[in-house]
Image (cartoon, rainbow, N blue to C red; front, side, top):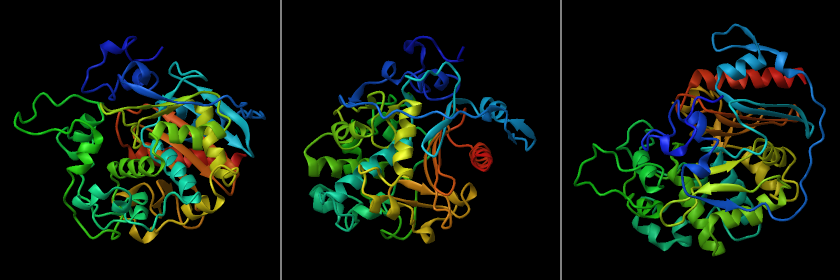
Length: 388
């Protein structure tokens, strides 16, 4: 049995995403927060062939650096599900912590990559131009810190907009985003005279400052993905959940409809509110590995693999010494150009082009960020890739 509560009303409003409650909440988000469906449509499921291999007994390195089986490593790293695809076929699939094949699991910032790939479809259709200013799409942005920023700089999180991403500070910009998204109430010890944003768009309009020239450096700020989503909504006249459904989800041949959490204005949270099943995340990863499958332009995926590594620095180089970030994806290094979708508390889609492998690991770590678990997980997946 899982360590979380059995009913959503047992969750502490300020800490539902923290241990031990996240072991339950991430698997039951439709009982935790308001959500909107990302409809799968009526098309057929794109079935996976199975060539299962006994990878559970494969020796990998534990967090302590000692030899352990892959199954033991999964338990050690608070895994809810692991899927490994090789040459488009399922070679390993495991569920833990009460997760089931139909369970929708919160992906946190994996949602950014889902949003970024959908944006790539709109770019391919000529609805978005990465070289244009974001204020060309939404004129009100000329009165914010994004004045003069291009859509590409938003896609790469290289604008100079001031935004404090500190997850553990409820009064940071990220803490305010938790409130504006409807994820958290206003902290009980907050300044009674402070004005808190009531929805995400209001918070975006309130971000006036910059810390550097646009395009000077990569700095991870979740709000950039939300701005991207608002630009996508502006050019289509549709809400994000409908865009993702029509342009991506219905075409992937997924098994289940997905969902986004929504704020008080009905905005679907592009930066971290996406929920889907383990195998459907795998279908998304396989589409990326396969060059878009006619859904996303192959040129967009190829471009995504070519990150501006010169903009990438500390603290991000601790876990990815040669890494980069481009089009809402992490790029492992300039040689392999492997792509990663990463989310706090241990969400990962790893696309290894040389080994024709996709791995999806959904987790509920006790911590937002854990460099040791990140690096150990990547090392374990490399061991899996070599074994295949």
